[in-house]
Length: 126
Length: 369
Image (tube, rainbow over all chains, first blue to last red; front, side, top):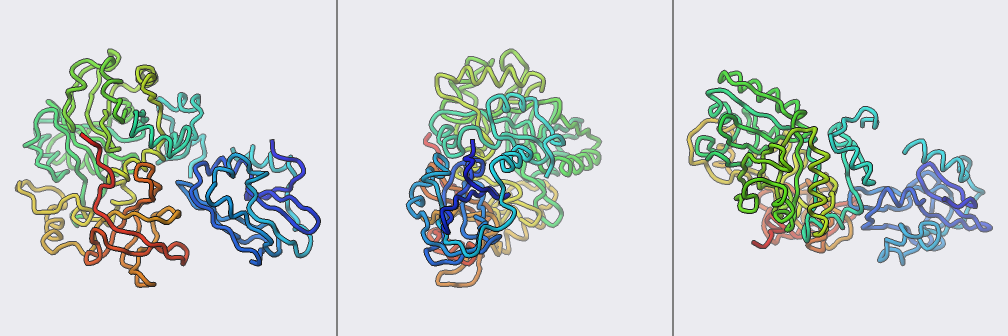
């Protein structure tokens, strides 16, 4: 169900790497848990991303969650089109629902999961 | 937070699971927080109707010759003036006037029945038992032997009529009678927590699945579905109703909460009366008020409300939600009395960012009658 060419974090973000640019979003599991999305706060192009720190907020009817950066780098582009169409995150979390594109500084950090380990994590915590 | 295995199940939990509900820990019970979508569920209750599993709430009664006196000491309403079949909304207060819970009190022939919040069950029962004892009365906790289900929305009367004995459509608001639902003896009351027309029914717990399914079957044509606790929270907020733990808690006084706004006419003593009336006379220093915001951010408990232009804090949010009915985000807050004015403009602080809000008297929504 989750794409097998992506890396995943324990906090339910996914990363697609293309050269030195990483595209980041939240997984179908995260989108489904949040369900009715009402607000998305994204960084701007040029903002710094620090691995392990919040790079934005996503808000549903019942809760606000931080978006956690899995990487170090600089924001190249934020998907601001989503802000008026948050349902895209639910309907296409790995495609049109991408959140930010980041120019990586340094390689990918340790600790990112492949799809099998991510799906195991989700199953264990269900 | 309890693990799923430690959480209590209601007689309806199996049905919620089968219906694909998302279940969460609510006061130690495994409860359905949503079925299809929170905002859709809110709209459905306002335009059609929905059912609610309320088995987690507490149900108890006081019996004994002096039950009226015992009940009077617990609540602020004039109990001896309540007619047979009447229901009133009230609260349990300490000597210092702070609220322990908000409750519904039912005047029945041989008993006074109470519906109390799930989260305060143990504490309430202990207090009620103590007071009942002072008047040689008995307090029976019926929470496990009785189930409680609600149906709320314009289609409620038509849905319940074929299932209930007696004149369920003609039952007056905040009244109840004992009859049958699907031939099962039940207390049927015209009450609810959504601001819509509807009923709350109490009956033997083992009959819950059959009655739940019968209500959904009866209401199928009108689009009646089960509704989760998240939608319930938004519905009650739109209707301006308090949720204990938010608008009411261990620090709040019924005067500042707007439950009692002037000195009571009756002279019957009740726990907390003197402190509450002192506060009414002196005037509360803060008041509960509603507000709306054009911000996409949802107001949440704990956010500060401040004077405009980076001004100081003058209030704190109790509850907040998007309001599908109003088409904007809404919330409640305690605000310093001098600033708690209808139409007043304040700013909500979310992690250092300020968002404009406009105050308004509750409720946000009142159904057309």
